Amino acid sequence: MGKYSLIHTENIPNPTKIDIWELCKKGKSLLQMFIDEHPNDDLIFDKIAGALSIIEITSNLLRLPKTKFRLIDGHGINCKVYEAKSGIIRLYLFHEENTGKVIVTGGKKGNQKEDIKSVLQTIKDFKNESK
Image 1 (tube, one colour):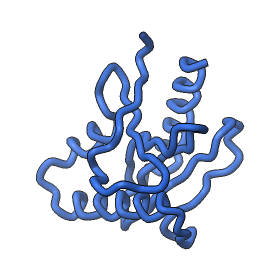
Image 2 (cartoon, helix red, strand yellow):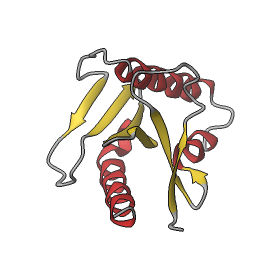
Image 3 (cartoon, one colour):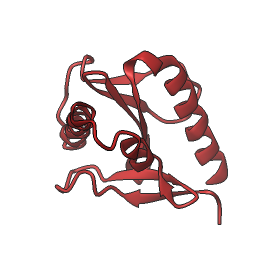
Image 4 (cartoon, helix red, strand yellow):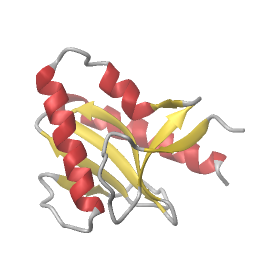
């Protein structure tokens, strides 16, 4: 067994037209690890909930403006990579063929470039392992 796995997200309780998963590394959800970094910050928690809501909306095949949900281009990975935005919070996800949307992790606006670079590497590692 590899170090990456997928679990159905419990952070979006409602059924969606496109399944939503979370990427786990060594059995731990990377998204949950990001959420757990902010245990008593209601503002951050509210923005994470807002970004999860955006993922839920788009997983029901509704479109949102790029200011809320955008495609990240030019990464050389054979899948679509997205960023859901709510205030200073960014949640990163990709579309896995025949599976659904996979939430990788979150980050803050000020760390966007580094976060995107890290997320893209994580997706590459996941895809290489699952070949």
